[in-house]
Length: 173
Image (tube, rainbow, N blue to C red; front, side, top):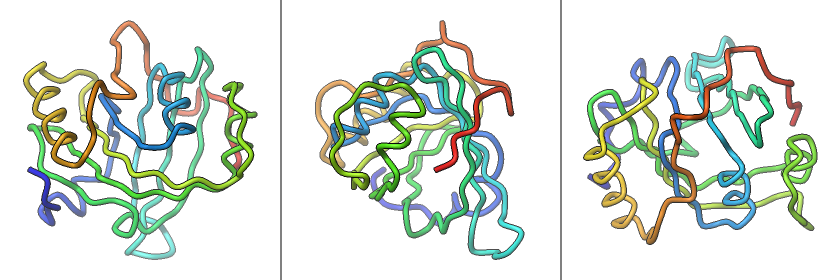
């Protein structure tokens, strides 16, 4: 359950995925995750390169809706791991740029001296807006095998709603 799965690549990644749970090893990312009420993303093939996906994100951070879009080569940033039916687990090593700008635009309080950060993270995303408790426990076991301990840095609480597409303030990063 911690080996990348090629069978999950391609069309399965396209469409909306809702963040259910996540771990990160970077304090700045954890600050964002703890301030996040809900998050979803939609991946579509890039118009310019079949090996790239356009990622559209909708975040609700501290009760404020934000959206952003980026184009990237997902295979270089993520490993897709097997998971529950209708779910996907991303194991990632991510370098983020303009991180201070993200914090300022989303009104998250964090002293960040470096505009770039690198994190090792793992996330459980689902097509639906909820998953079974047994699926969450399975994900926690996967995270443990990947070196994460303790409680997740993000766990979706269904009392928070998800942003509608285009509802949020656009973040230009």
